[in-house]
Image 1 (cartoon, one colour):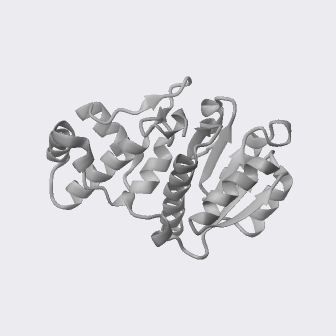
Image 2 (cartoon, one colour):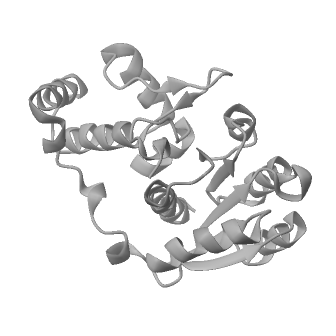
Amino acid sequence: MDGNTDRTDGIYSIGAVARMLGVPAQTLRAWEDRYQQIVPTRSGGGQRLYSRDQVDQLSFIRNQIEQGLQPADAHRVLAQQRHEDAASIPVERHRSARAGVDVATTVLLAERDPYAAEFAEYFLRTEGYVVRIVLEPAAAAEILRNEPPSVLVVDLLISGGSGLALCRTARDNGPVPVLAVSVVDSRDQALAAGVEAFLLKPLDPLQFVSTVRDLVGTSAFLRQRS
């Protein structure tokens, strides 16, 4: 494992977190400003990036509010539990990915490197996902139009750097969550293109699968809304 396994890394856009949790983005911003407890990192361009730990904490807050607590009280309970033992936070998101995978869940990998694609495909298939690999943006765009996947993973350097355009195509085509990956830190450009999450290569398998799992949940939420 390398440094990419850190659960405090900023990965998810505020839009992705809002859809994952069913909490409006303006509410997340209000909680951040008012309680100063769950404060996402900022990209070089000033955009919010939430870590997996922060998504778990926000899930805890949401669940407490659904059980009848006021937001201030929910944040107070979280602060107390974090102080006592962060590992004690009861988060449902840690269940096995395999148990929650739908047979129709498809991940489209748009990769520039066939070997990297095989590496990613292996771990996704191990978790029960159906994986389709394309090495050209045009092929990915056609699949997005005709057979939209549950999640799109895009190497931003595909075809000499055409990944950002593909991300914008996915954003314009419909509600398909996008995970952008790259050996270059292109977080701001990726977020501006409408992606839900960004990971820096080389990918750590556990973090990669965990991020895809979250975006599969986002995809399910979007399908329900539509």
